[in-house]
Amino acid sequence: MFNTLKANQFNIGNTTYRERIKKLDKLKKSLEFSYKMRFQDALYSDFGKPYLETNLTEIYPIIDEINFTRRHLKSWLKKQRVDTPITLLGSSSWIKYEPKGVCLIMSPWNYPVSLTFGPLVSAIVAGNTVILKPSEMTPNVSIVMAELIKDIFKEDEVVLIEGDAKTAQELLKLPFNHIFFTGSPAVGKLVMKAAAEHLASVTLELGGKSPAIVDNTAHLDKAIKKIVFGKFLNSGQTCITPDYLLIDEKLKGDVVALFSKYVRAFYSENPETSTSLCRIVNQKHFERLKAHLEEAISKSAVIEVGGSSDAENYFIEPTLISGLPENASLLQEEIFGPILPLVTYKTIEEAVGYINAKEKPLALYIYSKNKKRIDFILNNTRAGSTAINHNLVQFLNLNLPFGGINNSGMGKSHGFFGFQEFSNQRSVLKQHTFGAVDLIYPPYNKLKQKIIDLAIKWF
Image 1: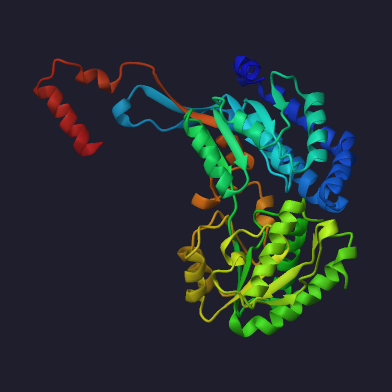
Image 2: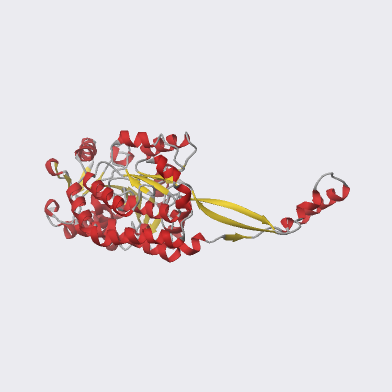
């Protein structure tokens, strides 16, 4: 398959704007109509994802990405003309966005549709051939995705390969031109190491511990309502979900009460019966989360809200937990589940220091009405993205780049930034007439030395 895609890469790379748009239209039509219900059923079978959440977080983002790309692709594909200095008089210069070639997209299980087809949209419009490798943890979704790909793409354009970690390891031995990986930092390091063997470029969308800071000027009711929604969407199995809550210590009682209020409002008095809350993806991840809770309780942490679980159904109740010692695993590892640690601070400087003592997060959320304080947090922390007085929603603005920094990833996606990630920015300079450089050909003499001296002084 790799060799077939490699042999066809220049044919695909020379496709026109209209040919690339046609491929997007086929994908869009399939997601909107013939495959929509199949994806809803598959995601429900894999981990109980509500149909509405599938539409909101899996189907809609790809339709939006396609619509956005259709509007802008023509301008992205044009020559990007740049200035040429006077010392190169007689020349013109531009940037040509050309395909990188054969690309590998390795997608995760938590949003298997949107995190597979989102990068695919960018790879297609940049003119690449692609191998898709989805996670084996959502097998029903993978089956449907494989059928969709076969239905709308030729085997020398885009192919999807199912399989486990061994399959992924074999794929990583191939000399891809670019690898787009979404997953954990630990696996991201392995991907980057494998890519280095072939000097392949990489985009790594990883994760980490994304904080949500709430200060004493925030509209507390609205803030907690948004945090509860953002945290328990997909049962917390989201890379940019709030991973711990940093609050002014004076707000703790009110925060706990509001948290409990909105968990009940969203998921009823018995969240296990709620049709708005999906399950943990498999037994391994359920046991990992259960172990986090058990360790926290053994270290005298306090469960403020929730805490119950059902092993048979891989269910963990939306949980707020406080009083954690810093060495607790819930404060050291990315949680990726419906558990939210609560940490208090006395001053905003203390909160910022706490964040900076950890790896740079994929997202950082600020709930405050104080502009000076917001600016202080923005200027004294580093993160892949930030939303102020909300969470998750920055992902939906395709005019913004999405991606992490260092431990939370590298490279950007979405909109133009995704197109750019799958493209080589080829610099082109064209000499039209006699050029200034022609004046300094050897043999060198005093006149030519003066020309160079003038150039150094004035240009």
